[in-house]
Amino acid sequence: MAEQTDLVEAVSVLRDEVLETAEHGDRDPPGSEVFDALLRALSIGGESVPGLDLQLHESVSRRLAWGDSEEVALSDAEMVFDRLMIAVERAFRDPDDQIVVVEAALQVAVTVARVVSLAAVARATRDRASRMREEMSQRQLSEVLEKQKANIAKLEQDLKSGFR
Image (cartoon, rainbow, N blue to C red; front, top):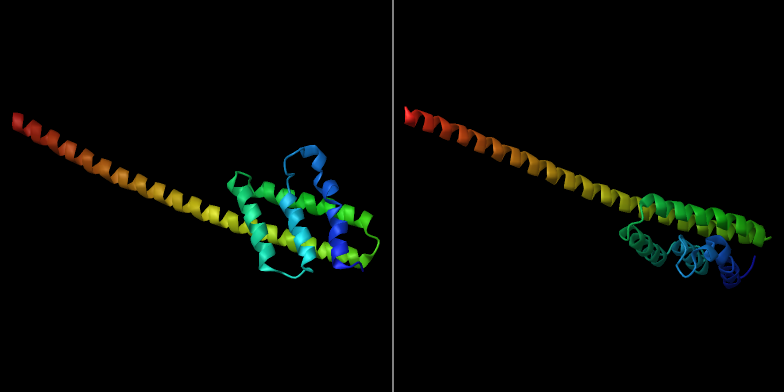
């Protein structure tokens, strides 16, 4: 099995191929945060480190905040994973090296899925709270309108009885 730093360097060489950077010009290609997280995961030896989760969480959350949907973020992570598996199979002959990269990629993919699911739950909670506030406002408005309607009817009744 290759030394850990050699493995990180060997995987980093696959970046352009996996992310198809030529298609995106100067912009960061979709999924670049996933690939960067993979390199961090490999450099720390595949252990689950809160720093990896935090950086990936920030990157994915930033994408979602800038308007990418949860589906797009997951799709990009899946695309990076799929292309990485093909590139790793071609680039690494040692099964032990392949397993290390696959395990790190799985850790990153699971982290992305967790971050996206947490964001989706938070969004759904906000949407539900917003709907409930809107429904409560509509009920209150309806009650006020009914009271005004009753007051107007009473005033009309009083006016009619006053003219008689």
